[in-house]
Structures are given as C-alpha cells and as structure tokens.
Image (cartoon, rainbow over all chains, first blue to last red; front, side, top):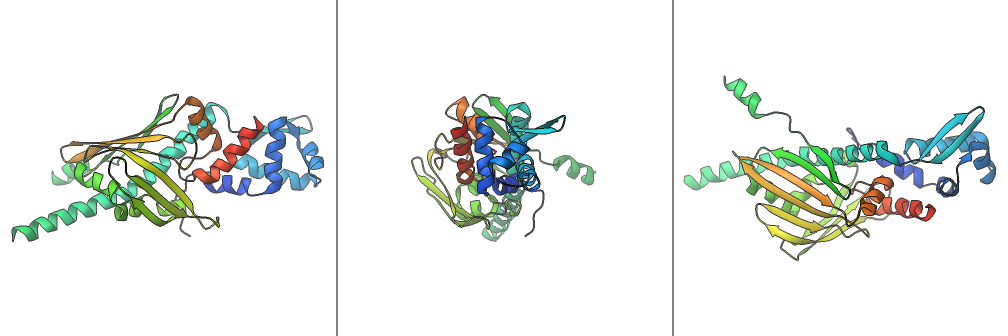
Length: 122
Length: 167
C-alpha cells in the first residue's frame, strides 16, 4: 500500500487499542498511575512484555511515562496543550491531503468546462 | 514575464487550521477555480468519492450517497483493511445554497460537530472556509482527547468511550 505522509498516529492508535492487554492497561492507568512492574504483575506478564505494550501506547500518545530512580511510572497521556496542538495539526493534515486531491478535481472540471465551451461555440 | 506571472499566480496553496473558540475549529484554503466548480466537487457524490479519501488515509469508499438539498441526508460508507466492518458516516444537510454555502451535521457519533463550508469567489479563485462547531467545549475536548479527527470516528469512539469510562 502506498502511504505518503499519513496523518500521524492513525495506525498507531488503532494498533494500540486493538489489544485486550493494552485496553486493560489504559483502564488501570485511568484509575491510578502505575509502574511497569505493577502493570506487569497485574497482567501477569514479564517486564519485557509489559514494556513493549507501554511503548506501543506511548507511541500512540495515549500513555506517558517518567523514570524516577529505578522506577518507571506510567500515566494516561493525551491531555494538555501539546496534545491539542497535535490534534489541530492532524486535523490540518487531513484536510490538506483532501484538498490536494480536490485541486485535481477542480482542475479537471475547469478543463472540461473549457472544452465543452469550445464545442458549444462550434 | 509570463513565467513570473505564473509563479505569482500559483503559490503553494496553504491549508490553515485554528481552534477559534472552545468548541470551534476552522480550516481555510484557496482553490484555483470558480466557486461553482469547487461547490460542484463538494456536492456530486461521484466527485466527492474522488477526493474525500486520499490514498494516504488507507481507506476507500464503499458507497457514497448524498442528497444535497436542505434537509437531505448523506451516507458515506468506507472501508479500511484493518477493520472487518465498514465505517458509515451519516448526517443531514441543514443548508444548501449553491455555490456559496453548505451546512451539514455529523451524526455517526454522539455530540458530533456541525460543519459549515463557505465558498467565496475572488478573481476566479475560491476562498473556502470550513468551520466545525461542536455542541459543547466538552465535545470538542473529547474529540481532542480521543485522537480522532473525524476520519475514523467510530473506531475512535471506542477509545473515547473507554477513556470516558476511566475518568
């Protein structure tokens, strides 16, 4: 599939919520922040496995994490001004991509009108 | 001279977006053609299908019905390779004033926006202003938080519901 400049995070967001564990992690973080270790225990998986899930959620902008000492604490992301700016930018990209296609249609309609006009005047 | 004129006439068209108020987002763009043609491209289903889902979105039209009259309804059905179920985008045209103004509702999700598009012609070019007005600040905030931008509302609704349940 050809993908030029896709609006960021479409696919990553889908991937993020398509997994039951990751949905569970979001739910858990909705109740309170948690460390990777706590999440791994809660969902009965290895630290490495949980790190991967959290990383997918981070890439999708749904979760943020910060490391204090040896503990990495995760919270629900996707809030605040930065997030809003990112949303506005995705929204702009969506319309910009549509409008680039719309330019072509308008051009075609102009050409058609021109040639119809020529034919009509014959 | 001609080349210079041509370059003056063909600047890279700029799509601007702004959050105009706590429940309103605005998109502006200029098209190199008269308003009647730009309007036509927004109102004839066979033309809408050609530009509404650019290849970069990875989604394609399955069907596109649009009864573009005041009070008429539309139903855009699209597919994405990652999803078994097609996505339906539905709503109603509240105002149809060719070739100046189009207003429609977005009803595939609760608290959807009302979209107004105006087409203003100047010297053979059309200045387009699209405004999405959400019913409340909370509705726009939720759209922001869900990560959805209107292209995949149903899928992102799942996420919005999930996040809502958490708060």
